[in-house]
Image 1 (cartoon, rainbow, N blue to C red):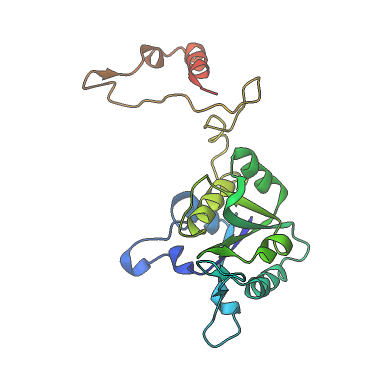
Image 2 (cartoon, one colour):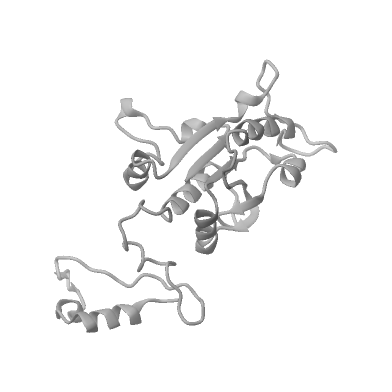
Length: 229
């Protein structure tokens, strides 16, 4: 799976080895997935596609109003270059906005199973020229009914969620019993059952006896009963 992220602030994603830290998408499971070539993440600075000497990517809205809008011509130039490298690849261009369709596990699964490349556009300022929405993208996605300063954090969340669904990224079977990976008979997603580790008694907070019984059938039944839909 390939991710192309168009952003005004690529440094938000970048690792800082001189400070001994990695970027948010270059640690742990995602780091190993990239090393194994299971996923690939490229960043594209929107300012690189502006044509004036000031690298202008936004302008005031027609009709007046507060704030600045990202320009359709600059965004089109960025997408043309990114998409030109995607011949014979199943790609989808996604605008990350509060107005978009809510991201959930069904959407995550759909993106992971049906596309080889996701192009993610991170917004900033007041918003986008409407023509970007109408002519340059495939869909809008939101991570919730709230407003952030930009689309970078939603992009990170989407990349993380979709990457986990790519075959080989997680250990085989490790995600089968996690929240939102299975459904009950009514079609609602099940949440993960409670889990415990040592010590078995801490401040009087004890581990359920059935988990220490060694009876795998009873433990499996208990876990299944404890999963909430």
